[in-house]
Length: 186
Image (cartoon, rainbow, N blue to C red):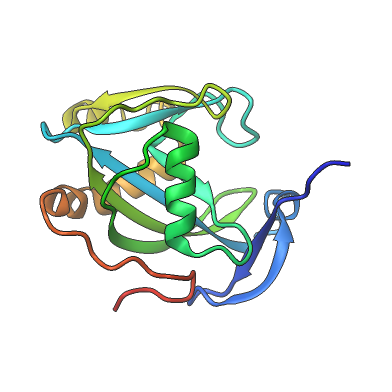
């Protein structure tokens, strides 16, 4: 019997109003469900991007945010962020700073995205079951490759929205992490 993964269904304020399976959330239903994104900078100011696995059901083989993953039903935001970071990149010790949240909508899904950043200089070990690799990119290199089908639409949208905030906060202390999807810092 196959394990069914359940995500919280949330309203635009991030309050849980139900739950749905991964399949339901990704089948065009547009059920709003929360995800975490982590942008990882090195001391040189370069941004780490992951190359999505060709086995992914959405945007296979494209470059994307360093860490991106769904929040499981009844899972706190920070727990999801740390779980996804460990699973995808093998990183356990890092100090995430909360940047913002926003709603992203594609043809098949609708997500409430919690955006974080960190500065990290340790080993990064992409999980070959999750990713097809990753590397640090210069900010200008990213900008010059926008719109060329290299990046996921979600990454391009988020990068354009929050890059200045990400760069300015890369050297600042972490902001409080919302404990649950419905608890954003003011």
